Picture 1 (cartoon, rainbow, N blue to C red):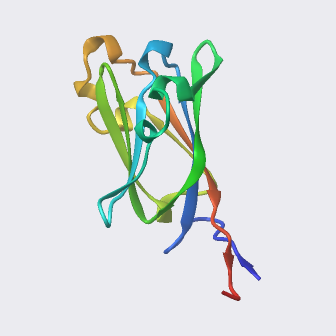
Picture 2 (cartoon, rainbow, N blue to C red):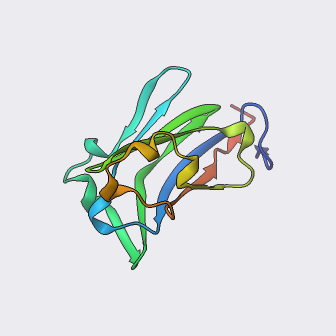
Length: 141
């Protein structure tokens, strides 16, 4: 049988599949880092990929860009996503217990250190969208 946590809950494991930036400028495509808070270990960095981080972003329309991870990154409980571009860096902490469904959208004011970016990179209309898929656990293993 499959176990699929529907509405959050303890021990929910998710796979981060993509990030979207809404109301962003193409010259500010950030490098993406995902780390596991409990082990403080880096589980993904766009800098590990060949090419530069900017080339991994796909412009969807005039104000929206998407970064699809080359492989879904498993996250459980507390994790951090850091975004770093030439205007500075900002990040967000999330816990899978509190993620309802498979999508989270955060406004610029909800991002840690966003207000300290260089003026040219400040955009208070920015939205960061994270898209997840559930980790399917086979109870027979």
